[in-house]
Amino acid sequence: MAILDLIENPEIMPQGYKALSQTQMVERVWQIKESFGDKLFLPAHHYQKDEVIQFADAIGDSLQLAQIAAKNTQADYIVFCGVHFMAETADMLTKANQSVILPDMRAGCTMADMANLTQLENAWQSLESQLGQTILPLTYVNSTAEIKAFVGRHGGATVTSSNAKRILSWALEQQQRVLFLPDQHLGRNSAFDLGVALDEMAIFSPEHNQLLGSPDVSKLKIILWQGHCSVHEKFTVQNIQQIRQSSPKTKIIVHPECSHEVVTAADFAGSTKYIIDVLNEAEPNSQWAVGTEMNLVNRLISQHPDKQICSLNPNMCPCLTMNRIDLPHLLFALESLVNKAPIGVIKVDEPTTTDAIKALERMLTI
Ligand code: 13P
Ligand code: SF4
Image 1 (tube, rainbow, N blue to C red):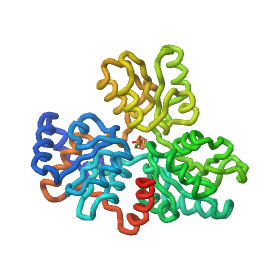
Image 2 (image 1 turned 120 degrees about the vertical axis):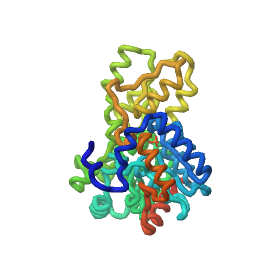
Image 3 (image 1 turned 135 degrees about the horizontal axis):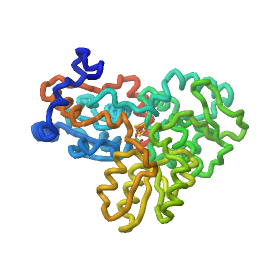
Image 4 (image 1 turned 90 degrees about the vertical axis):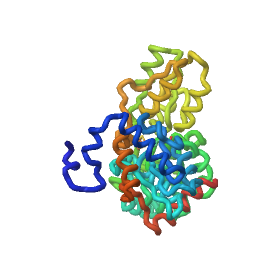
């Protein structure tokens, strides 16, 4: 038993749920879903486990889920199967009378945790004192509501992996320089594709509150926050070389949260939705190595028995925080709605929402 489970906290799932059989839990989830009808909406990110995905009313990447949340007006409860920053975004984009529930509060994102507001305020001060008012901030949606609010207050926008190039190109028309956070890889890969040279980019270390490597600031166009995804950084150029050697016909497709070296060495790179679309359209018998989260790769393998699909890294494991949302936690959250004592309610405060919405709406309209 985990030590946290011993603490009497109504937000923590009682041990009894783990004693239920899979069949009991599945039946009960369907019953509860049916009883709520369209008053309950269950969106799920592509990286969720199959045991959760089977109940999803909508499955999507980060951009699709933000758009879907913004459109849903009939549900009283949105049970968000994804990670904390996605549930925050859904809360900010839905009406005040709608409650967004995250079935396990421990479902965070290590990348989003790599940028906090104090670090960003310090960074902004330090960068403006060095470069003047020449910078526009952009944040990947994989960031806290507070970071989105800062970006919104400073005229910037959010981005997802599906629209990063379009938003970045808009930002470079508005300002001389862009501060891109928290994922240095998505920032570098997107800027490079737009024709920005690597020596026009520099990394900013939040830990040391300074640009790294004494760059020539007169050339500087993109400032990359030193953050990354702990899942996607596990794909390496060596993985690619091994596949090229052992199976030369295999095409390699990766997510742009992978390093620039990996993206450059791969055949294709794009968001979760892009990867799914490419594999849906691929020829029967074609061979693919996929560099993204393991729950999605395993689902693609079972959905395409006519194609040979494998993970680019044979030792890969799923995103641990996405995996926090499992069947027992989903059932626990749904039972809490039945009992009219919802657990895992995600509520972003008004001032933060007002500013963060500016950044989100710029993204949704650009
Ligand atoms: P997308 O859904 O935008 O492809 O992002 C992947 C991801 O890492 C979400 O946490
Ligand atoms: Fe965060 Fe990476 Fe997991 Fe996505 S895959 S939730 S970016 S840690």
